[in-house]
Amino acid sequence: MHGINEGAAALRAVLAKGQADDIVMPFAENAPYIIEILKQIVHTSSYNKYFIKVLSCCEQYCKSLQNSQTSSIRLSQRETEVLALTAEGLSREEIAKHLVVSAGTVKTHLQNIYQKLEANGKISAIRIAKMHGLI
Image (cartoon, rainbow, N blue to C red; front, side, top):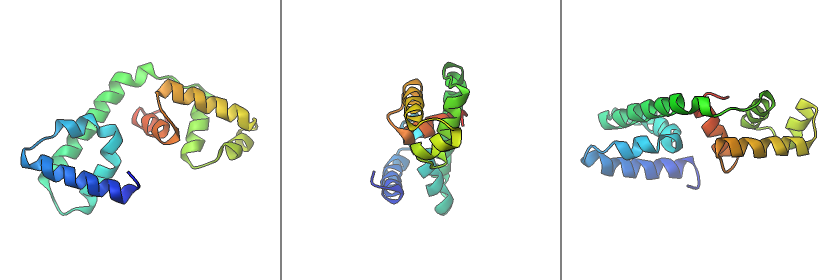
């Protein structure tokens, strides 16, 4: 997706198709990727029972996923600090200055974080960490 608005428009279109047959599970199974946009759609749309049902299932799925995987993901205290500062929007250099380490050390921490979370970048690492209550 190119942005939030495009993502919301695409999700809205798919929800409309799913609503015809009361399809929920494909949305729940993809909840970690769509839940923030889905929340935006639910909060900015006029009352739609189906959208609310899908959001509720997505929230339950994420909670269940978090409970089943929380114990398997462990970040060090420093990795948690680096990821939290990354989530705040700080650059590697800014994080390095804040933590009094080199930018290379921050890069290494980020690589370790991505590996532990099985993430392919900052955005997915932040999303996964939030979903698991790590940050």
